[in-house]
Length: 406
Image (cartoon, rainbow, N blue to C red; front, side):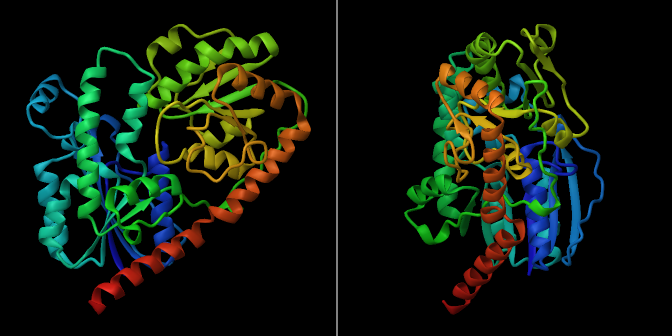
C-alpha cells in the first residue's frame, strides 16, 4: 500500500503534540510495511530546517516539504472578513504548494491520501481532481470548531467578535468536509461521536487513537519525599494552553500555596508570553523551550493539565501516563482518554477542588504509586502503537475492497 500524508508542519523533531502525533502516525504506518510519502507545509512561523529522519520499521519513507508563510497579517484578516471563508483553513492555501502537490499526485498513484488535520483539506479539490481513485481520509486531531467554541466561553477579549464569526464559518466548513472525504479518523471516541453526528454515517468514521511504544519509555520513579514540584509542559502558541495556565495561576495556585506552602510550580514550553517571564508568580518558574521534555516531566512529583477548552486528546498527558506520571487534570484536559477519576488520574474543574487534589496527591505517596501503575497499564492495554496501526491498515484494506466490490 502506498500512502501520501499531507501535513501543515514539518513534524521532526516533534516539539509539540501535533508533531508527535504525526511522527507516531508515520512510525505506525511504516510498521505495517506501508510506503509513506510525506509532503509537509513548513510554515514560516514555526519553520523547521528539513532534516531527514527514519524509523526502524520495514516500510519506505519519502519526505518532501515546502516553506510557506501562513502568518496572521492585518491585511489578510481584513480581506477574510469579506471572503466568507474560514481563516483557520484559508491561510494554509498556497499556489506553489498546490503546484508541487499536483506534481506528486501525477508522478505516481496513491492508494490513500491522508490529510493530517482540517487545515490541509484546503487542497481536497486538488486531490480529488488529480487522484480520483485514491481513498481520501481526514486524520482529525480535534473537532476544530469545538476548540474555539469552548475558548469563547471562557474569554471576553477584543478579538472575541472576530473569533465568534470564525467559529461559525469553521463549523460550516468542517461539516462540509466531513461529508466530502471518504473516511474520517478521529483521535478519540468523544470526537468520533461529533463526526458521526455531522455525517450521519458511522461506517466512515473510525477512531484511531494516538499510539505509543510504551516498552521503549522510561518509568517514573520520583515517589520519595522531597521537593513538592508540580510541572506543566505545553506549546504556548496554542491559545487554549495559555488560557489554561492563566486560569491556574490566578484561581488555583494561590489556593495550593495556602494548603501546601512548600509547593513549587515549573512550566516549560515554547512561545511563552513575555508577561509570564517578566512577572512570575510566587514560587513559579518559567523555563521556556527545553531540550529534554521527558527529563523535565520526570523531574516533577506530579503533572497538572489545567485546560478549559480544546478537543481531541492531550498528547503530553498520554505520554505522562505512559511514563507512569501522577496527574491532576480538568475534565476537558483528559477528554477523549479512557481514564477513570481516582483510578488512573485525579480530575477537578473547580479551583478549590483542583487545589485540594494537587495537595492531596503531593502528600500521599501511596496514591501517587497507585495512579502511576494504573496509568501506565491503561496506555499499555489501549494505546499500543503497533496494534493501533494494524487496525488502521486493516480498515484501509477493507475500505478499498468494499470500493472494488461496488
